[in-house]
Image 1 (cartoon, rainbow over the protein chains, first blue to last red):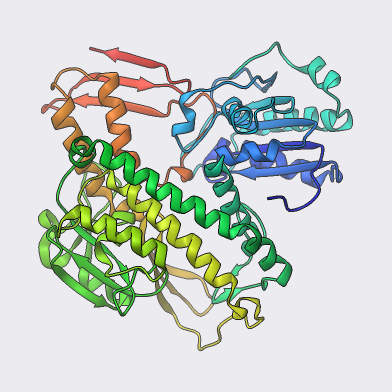
Image 2 (cartoon, rainbow over the protein chains, first blue to last red):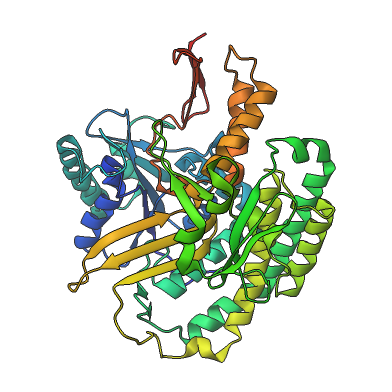
Length: 168
Length: 343
């Protein structure tokens, strides 16, 4: 089922706003929404990635997954993703590359080119109020990157900024 | 593909009803801030027959899986318990508005048709020093014997019938498996959960055919009250919200018993049952950790509220002896790799 026209670029972020720096993904989407990225970009936010998010990949030219990360290099890492099955499909939270693998499995075709923006977080406890100081800085840096990506929505440009192929 | 599309349909129902797939904005105290349009209704009606068919197939699939290895599915994480949940006045399966019913391990009523606003007279929450989780129990049975299970298994064990035909047929199969007693297997939660999924598909179809769904009388009217209790059957189980407010509508008291808290002792018992079978008392193994996860996930605790940041250890297991000393620790990281730090 489809609710309307599909935007070419999907930015899909996840995180729990009540758990400190886990809010990095949702807060980044708020920043981007305020920047009014236009009809060619869809911003999608959820608590975690799930199998049905594979269907959100359909018809996209570019996909950017966004999530907080507990151990990536600060302020963020930006990587091209390849689909891969792992055991996260048995949990409440799938990895972005496993979501891509679901797309491959159910559609019988390769998913659209996808990238992962991991923002380094420092604290994730329930009730942690707001972002840590470090995460605030990481959010600023990641928002600047995203603005550049959205100003140049083509895979050649995105790949030029990405680290070598990674999965986590 | 059917399962993924079914989940997608549910997200669409949420989006259409609440405005967004996550963090919907349509709910107000006493009602909703927007009505469903005819276009919304037709959009959801378009796929509901197929969704119901898929749900029916999933119920049959989980039934076959369960019965293919009954020894394992019946005894894994098994323990007898009481069951608590809402039922309709006529005993029907109910998710939103009904009376509290509790049965014991043999199906005998502990209480029935209790006005949920009087829940403090029937339920008590015990605090223990070693955890922030509370231990709810039925007052008349005491904390030792009065704990109970909630959620799909309890709802199926407690109700007398389901008001939609396909789900009722599935419930009868489920009840027959119990042979006259409530079904007590932890893994039967999954079977019960799929029967509820089928009920929801049928109920959504009924609601979409109801002209009142497009009505614009959206918010109930009444005199302001300073104390209120609301109870629903959330997907994971019975959910109590109890609030007091002052003249400025500021909350002065709040008590919530969420589904995972209601199932607290039950999940502990599931862990105990698995440990009794798979733990040698000295060493934590990958098999044990996996079995514990299977047991806990039967109850589907509210992990949506947890952190899912990439790179985070999703599961850590500690073995502590009677003196309180840690004698083993095993963790599994987000890539599924195991790490044993002691032992």
